[in-house]
Image (cartoon, rainbow, N blue to C red):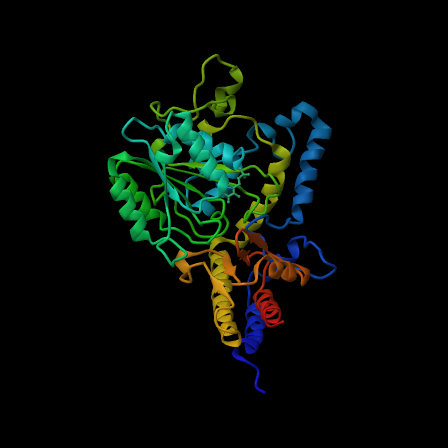
Length: 428
Ligand SMILES: *Cc1c(COP(=O)(O)O)cnc(C)c1O
């Protein structure tokens, strides 16, 4: 019997891996060994792998602490008073931002609240927030509680947009029409850059345009977008953004998150903020003045001195992103996605109709690394079977298995091997 089209793709995977200019980066990460097997790590969308260099980067700060004590703020290879500053330069290319628009700080949900304090300023007539119906729970809780904080009923203030019946993802036209319909009652559009559940990458530029046309602000949660898809926050005229860095940015559990505030909002005295001393202009901060003089950059939103130990791991990770470069990372991401789609469709030929479905859009501009798979009639036990077979993916209620082959450490062969396991499991 001739091998099936799916089986023949194994050779294609191998040859694409041989031609991969980023192949050597794979050796610079630590791989968890679970289930006594060499596992396939497809959970970079949830917790990215540890760059081996994170250990030395952390050790450097421990050495500074042990050698200099409090003087580590001013001595050592990267003095702590300005520790966060180069992060803006390292993060800006991943965001399509100017460095002054970016600060590494805080945690994602807390940062969302601080940004909403500035950019969700509801009035009795303009108080609505438009978000996706499958927002991440923490984002819903943040938006609902912000509405309540301002005295509004979230059931009225927080408007969810859902896909059309029978569809998995949102149509840009429907989002634009909803913005138009809410018109003068709309205070804020708040969308994920890439939706955590479906993997859909939104047309942020056109959505921001529509939001601004009706007088609303546009914010985005980039938890699943940064380090994944190409972004141009500045040119897209996004008002603000927040992200976490333990997902695609491989910065470790609970790592320092970050914010973007568009240049047009910097240095403005009429934008209220919840402030702290690290938001003060850096050159006069230590005069310990009674009154805040906010920095003229996004640092004005910063509160506290940097969590140096956890940012040390992020420093090691961002160095890998810089070394790999955006062009090569995006080319590899697209190659992995194209190969996944090719193999997925070939596999469907080998399986009974309806045994495998994918929620994620297929067209490249509408998605990132992640594919959200559904195995009708199989449920969690099939996911558990995949786990025992060595696949580290994740399960999202009620029925979604998310996989995210990422450019820095995954291969085309892993994509094929994963789908081959799916084939075996669905046939068993
Ligand atoms: C991962 C994720 C979070 C997590 O929030 P933390 O404050 O970092 O715990 C929030 N929102 C979205 C969209 C996420 O994907």
